[in-house]
Length: 133
Image (cartoon, rainbow, N blue to C red; front, side, top):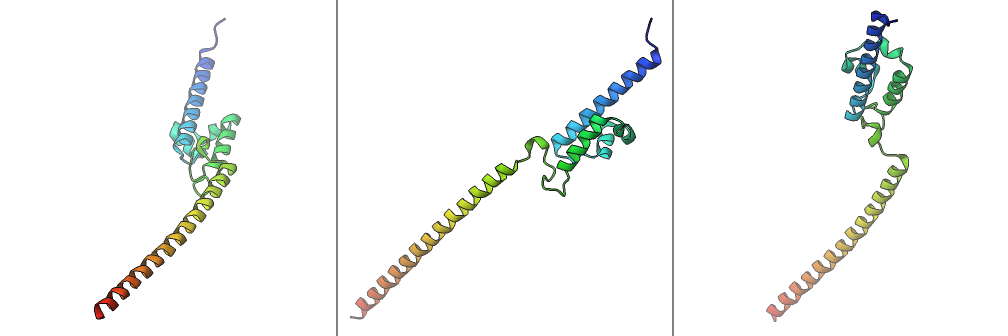
């Protein structure tokens, strides 16, 4: 017995719609674009209401929506490229250490400059005294 052509067409349309939704979801996330139901629906050319009926896709949208909110800490960065808390802490510690090194170098250079200016004034004063005498 052959499958019903209407059922077969509906199944094909469903799979095509799913593929469009998944592709749009991945592209939005990869581009760092905010992932929302409206955004995925528009990018895929499908309805938002259909997205809400698909538990796996709607769950993925909800997870990504929390992570790609431009007002949030991720700033629209794709999920795979976001830094972990540990890596951010390590980068902060490295930046603080570098800042200390630069402050120390700055203080050393200021001292060297002060000595050089003092030596220059001393030699100018000696030179002036030698010319007077």
